[in-house]
Structure formats: structure tokens, C-alpha cells
Amino acid sequence: MAAQHPAHASRSKAGGIVIAACLLAAVAGIVAAVGLAGVPDAEPTASANVTTASGSPTAAPTATGSTNGGDFPAQPPPIPPMPTVTFTVVAAGDVLTHEPVLNSARSGNGYDFGPLFAPSSPFVKAGDIALCHLEVPIAPKGTAPSGYPMFGAPVSLVGDLADAGWDGCSTASNHSVDRRFAGIETTLDAFQKVGLGSAGTARSAKEAATVQFYNVVEGNRTVKVAHIAYAYGLNGLPKPAGKPWAVNVFDASSADVTPILDAAADAREAGADVVIASTHCCVEYTTQPTSTQVSIVSQIAESGLVDLYIGHHAHVPQPIRKVDGGPGGNGMWAAYGLGNFISNQALENVGVAESSSGLVATATFTVSPDDEVSVDMGWTAVTVDRAGGHVVYPISKDTGAVGKLSAKTVKARWQLVANAVGDEPTEVTSPGEPLADYMWSNQRVK
Image (tube, rainbow, N blue to C red):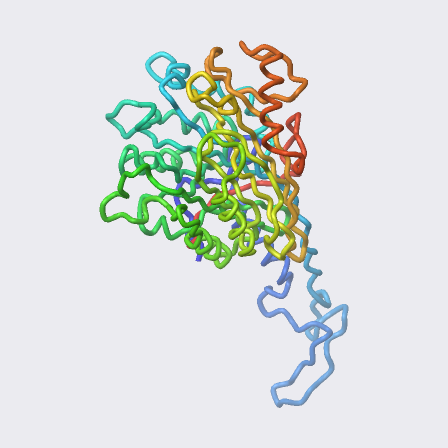
């Protein structure tokens, strides 16, 4: 049964709060299905035989009336056909608040990340559902924000992510317990307050046993999109004592994806039409997937349980490929690694030029009336202008200079992203609009 958590209000991508679409759609569907058949003491329709009190059959009422002279229709109106639903999901790489990033966001006595996200925000808001990857916990109340190696972001980051257009985030990473269990609680409390969904960490066993859904609604149809998230480990730190459910982890050393497949199966059982798996793994600073990554992706695709794979942790962009398997055997798109969305990493401090950039992946889902799901993939390169205050810019080969980055630097960074991504997906160079007039609501379902 659905168990909707408080403060998980529905929001339109245009902004503002809307009534939860799921309940409205369900009520509308019931009304459409029963028509006037639910009117008390309504007479049978013309297609039914009528039996008298003695048990002897008599003539059925005519199509234009009833046995008592009432003017009821012969049959309820037809149920509207199920529409084809098309929507987009956008996802981006690691949100890493290194100390210099925190310094760039300082505003008065607090922090404001809004200006840092502003140039990339139109691409985020173009998605019907936008999923970020928050690699760091929020610093608990009474503690100061901090950067690497033990991260703790200011709570204002969560509201700024929501304002930038994100609808939820994966939160399972090797830094999930940098601030122990209090950091997990603080992070998810902040998400709940602003209405963001989350996947990968939990405040209770009950929350851990639920699936994060984003419901896309059109007309009389609701498409349930499940988001699951797992990490390879916790940098050697233990899970919170007595709380093994606090962070989703799997054994990457043996490429054992059983927990991920179990979570995907649970999501399907809970009613998911689409399943998206975010995985934080494996080797950093390599643009080509490792053999472990390839094995992980292949196993997930072969299960037929997951529609889209999203990878994180490498801190550099990696390929987007369609691999064999997927639901119905139609293939599964895998974004092996989306690189960094915002960080202080660059050639100068980690020795890898690609670490300055990442990408926003755009997956366009089409769900047919008979529940067949097809996916098209697109990508947009993004890069961080460190000298200009860690502003995140979307870029293409024709962008030119942005912030304090020269046109030559921008083109070179774009080329590195393009080389890593490959030529299977389509580049998206300008933001569109959310498709049709969909509303989404996020809920957790057990």
C-alpha cells in the first residue's frame, strides 16, 4: 500500500505547489469507469435481463428509459483510452562542496549557491523529473560546514538545489557517513522540508524499506518512476551502529549487484513502470569504464529490471551506451559516469583535465498504452569556472567564452566531454521545456 510521507508535496516544473496528482487521477479514473452506474437505485441497462420477485424473467428496459420511467442512459460512457505518455528525466554528476566551492557560495553570514547554479538551471528545469547526485551530507545543526576529506555542506545547499530545478537526488556515496548518522538525518530532513525526493540513505528502517517514486501524470494515466541508489563503500568508515539500513551499499570488489537487483525487483513489485538505478562506483579519474563497471552494468541490464543506469564517482565524464538486455530485451541505456557537476577539481589539483567538467544526461521516456517503454538519450556538457567563482556553465563547441574561461578553453573542455561520451546519444545544445502539461508528485511506497 502507498504510504505518502509528509511534506512530499506535488510540484509543477513551472514552480509552485499543486494538488497531489496521484489521488486526483485515481478518483477521476473511478468516476469515468463507473459513470452513472454508481447512482443509488439506478435501473439495469438495456443489455441486462431483469428478474421479477417471483423469479420469472421479464423484458429488459429500453435503451431510452427504465422500467419506472426514469431517463437513465443505456450504458455508461466509454472509458477514455490510455494515452501514450512521453516525459524527460535529466540527471547530472557529483555535487561536491570542496572548501573553495563553499567560499564562492559565501553570502553575508550564510551561503547562496543560486548564482553558481544559475547558468545551468534552464537545462535542469527542462526535465519533467530532474535527479542530482548529492555526494556530501549536510552538516548537522551546531556544526560548521567543511570540505574534503570529511564533507559537510550548509543546509542552504538543499533549498538552492530545489530552486535550480532539481526534484530529488541520489544520496548514497562513499561520503554518506562523513558526518555519521546525524548527517544522514540532517540531509533527509532538509530534503523533506523543501519537497525533494531522495534515494540511497534512510533515517529509519521503515524509510529504508520504501521505494522513492516520482509520478508523472497525464489525463487518466499515472506513470510511476522509481529511483534506487547504491554506493560501493564508505571510505572505510562503518555504517552507523545498529543501523545497517542507513546507507545502501553493495560489494563492488566482486561486482555483486544482488542488492541493486533486489531493490529494482521491489520497485517493480511496488508498481514501478520505469526504474532508474544510480550507482556510485568504481575507479576515479578514468574516462573509460573499468571491467568492474562493465560487469555491473551488464548484470543490471541482463536482469531486465532497470530502464536507465546512471553512474557516479569517477569525477570525469564517461561513455553513454545502449547495452544488451533491459526490460523486454530492448536494450538499456547506461551513462557510465556523469563526471562532476560542481566541485573544485581540475587539472591543476588532481592532474586530470576532464575533472573540471561533466554532463547533464537527458533521457526521454515514451510509455505506450500497453506499457512498452522506450528511451532516447541526450547529453549536455557542463563545466566549472573555478576562477570565476565556481559557476557551472552549459557548453557546446560553439559556446565561446563564458565567465573567466576563454573560448579556446571552453571548446577544449567540450571536446574532452564529447570524446568521453561517444557518438551513441544525441547532444542537446539548448534547453527545451518540460513535455506537455505533466505534473509530478514524489512519494515513497512500501
